[in-house]
Each structure stands twice: as structure tokens, then as C-alpha cells.
Amino acid sequence: MSALDPETAKRVANLTLQARKAVDGLLSGIHRSPHRGASVVFVEHREYRPGDDLRLLDWRAYARSDRHQIKRFEQETHLRATLVMDRSGSMAYGGEGRRTKAEHAATLLGALAFILVRQGDAAGLSVIDSAVQKRLPPRTRPAHLEEVLTELAQPPERGTPTGLHAALSEVAERARRRGLIAIASDLLDFDEAALSPLSHLVGRGHDVVVFQVLDPDELELPFEDPARFEGFEGEPSLDADPEALREAYRAEIDRFVEACRHRCTSVGARWVLARTDEPAERTLAAVLTRGGRGKGWAR
Image: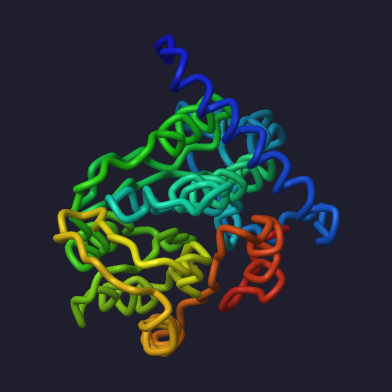
């Protein structure tokens, strides 16, 4: 990896610290099996190929045949995970004294990457706004984890639009092998079809987790004085009195969040509200301890 400029290096170091802290807090409360959930039912041998895990070499078969052969089992032992980071303009918002939504989302996904790589699984990354802008395929190497964290630490640019339907459709198209798809986004896309690609992912056997990342300001509209509100994705500014709007606003945002929850869970995905004022490990535990459809992946 090339040398980072000081500001980027600082962001990466901070994200690494936050993600490690979240992992440590999470794993202290979750039992981890030493068996990694892999099947032990032997199926057959196949010829060794460069890059295969040397621990799976069958030395007895080599002694008999003078050929390097790999033992294949009923299931693949490694999980492949794709972490999906929304880097549209609205993710740049952060209330006073709090991290931005993008920083909180990066901590959640970075902590997941730590967990996955630590247990020998493969973690990849897709950065999205109105399309997939950056893709790192799933890998198990520690050096790859550095690349994922470095990319997660990049901030969003104000004015960048959201297009979840197109972006998630592209993620679904690329995610051919079953695995985990973890999405961190504020879901602020009012297209009715924005989350429809989730049904394709679940239908193909993926375990889909959606972290809806929102700031308390967005949920509660706590401001007292009349103010000018500016859009983060190119919307025109709006002069408003928060006190006059608060009751109606809160009812509308509650409906929006509930609609997002329903759209996710109705197709079989797991959904959790990830408030930026709550510890990342608490949000992760709410998902991991719930278990997936079928084999668990927090081992």
C-alpha cells in the first residue's frame, strides 16, 4: 500500500482504534466456538492448486500416489463477506460533538472486517452512492484488511447523490457466491424501489444485514431556534422553525424508519437502527446475537 497523506493516515488510525475498541467490547460478550462451524464430512480429493490451504494437503495420499492432493469437505470452511458502505453526501452529517454518519458506518463495517479476518474469513468492500464507486474483492490476508480500513476511512463529499437501487443491484450482480452482505447506509433514498435488490440477495442465499445509520438530530429535530437547513445532496436550503415542525417531523421520520425496517425484514434481511450516539458494539451485538438464517457466522 502506498504512503498515506497525514490527514488520511490520521483518519485510518482513528478508524482502526474505534473498530478495534468495538470488536473488543463485542467479543467480550459473545461466545466464540473454536470449531469455526465447518463441516467435517469428507467428500473427495482433488489436485492441489497454487494458493490452496496447505493444511488441507493429504500427506497419506501423497505417500501412496506421489501427487499433492487436497481434502475436500461437504462445505466450504470460509465465509465470504461483502461490506457495503454508503458514501453519498447525506452520510457527511454529524451532530455537534458526534462522529458523522459515515464515520459511524465505517466503525461498524471496520469492526466486522476485523472479526471476519480474525476468524479466517474473507472480507471485501463495495463503496456506493448512486453506483458502486470502489470495490475490493473478499480476501483473508491482514494486508487486505488494511486496504479495507483505509478505504472505509475516506470521507463522503457533499453533493454526491444517493441511488440505492442501482448501486445495490450492482452489488447483487457481483455477489455470486453465497455469503454475508452487510450494508451501512442512512437509506435516505425516497425511491420506492430503492431496497428491492435486497430480495434478490436474500433469494440467492445471502445473509443480508442492514445497518440504518442515523444521527439523533435527524430522528428528533431537537433544535430550538429558527434556522436555515441545507441539503447534503444538492437540495435547496430551507428556512424553518423547528419548534413548529417538530411533532409532524417526528411522526414522518418514524414512518420512514418503520418503512425501511419493514422493507428489509419482509424479504428476509436483518435490520437494525444504528444511532450515531450509541456504541458500535451495542449495535453489532444486536445483529450478531440474533443469528442469521441458517449457519451462524459469528463463531
